[in-house]
Image (tube, rainbow, N blue to C red; front, side, top):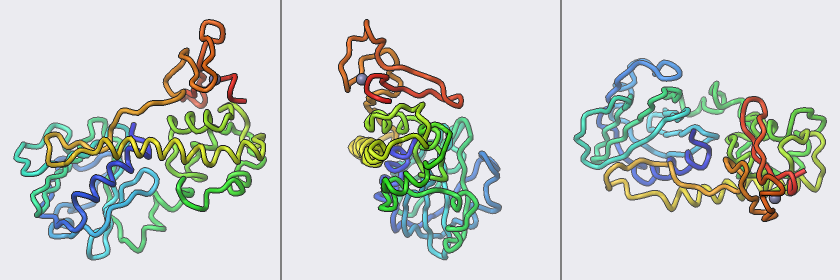
Amino acid sequence: MPELPEVETVCRGLAKALTGAWIESVEQHRGDLRAAFPKNLPARLKGRRVEKIERRAKYILITLDMSKTLLLHLGMSGRILLADNDREPPGKHDHLVFHFRNGITLRFNDPRRFGMCDLAATHDLPRYKLLHGLGIEPFSPQLTSTFLAAKFKGKKTSVKAALLDQRIIAGIGNIYASEALFHAGISPRRKAGKCTKAQIAKLVPAIRKVLKAAIAAGGSSLRDYRQANGELGYFQNRFAVYDRAGKACPGCRCDIKKTGGIRQVAQAGRSSFFCPRKQD
Ligand SMILES: [Zn+2]
């Protein structure tokens, strides 16, 4: 599933290729994904100009002229493919295909169909149903240890669940919650309300550090979209604990025969990975 760094990488790739581009035509090959597509979408997008492309949480916001914003979400398996002079017929899961006047084609491909596409009035975005309840961005200056301490105060849920709560910080998913807690030395099972001041002070830079490193890895993976198969946003990443159950912890270089290495536990049906020696 694409997480924030992948979506940020997609946005940067799209912005590079499409800022200022005009939409020539849009092919729509089904009526819905997670939700119905807006009515008459191809007709409403034809002739519009892309003014700006940015990310909010895991939404891709494409600001168009005439005060409209196209919202895309990649869901579980969504992919965006860019190509120049693309004459291939639409693939099975290419639900939307955008043709731009600059010769670029954008395919929104989503085999599992949990993605979404909607069109909203730009000035209404702060009140848009899927955005208005979202918490702050991890890179926003609003994210401070004081802010997080206030949000965690008295919370009986785990700190892992609190990090995944999109109403507090928007865009942290399962992978980067585990990674950030490792770097902060906090057990994912600790109650949010029981985190010490010192732990929370470490957590804020840890969140930014893991996301920043992943975004940097994504940026270096961005190929020129003129090359074949210009898929944006998926890249190899190295994790300290995520998906490394039983392997040696990079923090304490323990003997895994004695310690069992990194541990995996289920929390609310999702896996958390941590080092019991380094995180408490
Ligand atoms: Zn360790």
